[in-house]
Image (cartoon, rainbow, N blue to C red):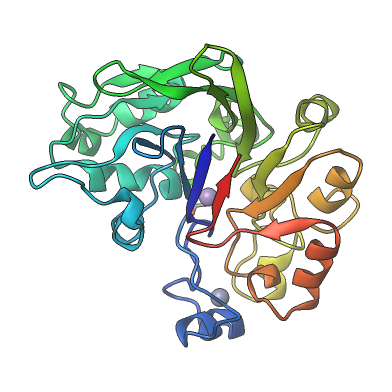
Length: 313
Ligand code: MLT
Ligand code: MN
Ligand code: ZN
């Protein structure tokens, strides 16, 4: 069985965002049960219920680990159930939490060569001692059985595949087409259980950033039991409409939920067992339980992820 634990269902900035006084951030800050706090983007996955792999390491990781007893140390000395980390891109909300893991805990760090290159060029990530934090490259479109720091199998494979998107905000080069993005800059993840006999078990997809659903990607996801998908905004121009920014979702490398080009319409044509929105921006009304937009996505068969959500597959 694959267990999935949502550590952070929010997008970059989280919900509430520290510098946002909008109505729904105020509700979250006030502890309104209809508007629960969502920390920044990360999930944990385990096949044995003991050793957990982080997929993305958010700036809120310290709080997330405190909040989730499953991820607390189980020995009297130094220990952590965190047995590996995979990052899907170099966005701040997906890599800043690596700095929280610097206290001498051995784990392999899996990412594309592109992302390893970006992290390697940033001396601050040298706090992750290479003697115990093994940088392991993942080739796209190639399922890789993950192992822990001792080389013991973690009970699942991970396959990264490029999806429409863009380079991390902090690496954008305005002089280059697509801001200098390459296909490996944004990837989705397929996690597939490996049963004790070696045969494939359950699988799911985790795609926290995705700018469009072209036919090949739609075909890949069609028939899946579970997809956790980019729920950054409800409308493409939401940041401007809330007067908290100017960028569209598309400009940020995300597809909106609504509209003819949105994820609601795109997934309506697919057969997906369970659809869960994740990486949800603080401007998105689906974060709040009593909104029309939340009703609309639920009526379309979607769940809206929350911190601490558990899914077993
Ligand atoms: C995004 O998902 O677009 C990024 O995480 C934005 C950011 O870096 O804050
Ligand atoms: Mn993000
Ligand atoms: Zn807000």
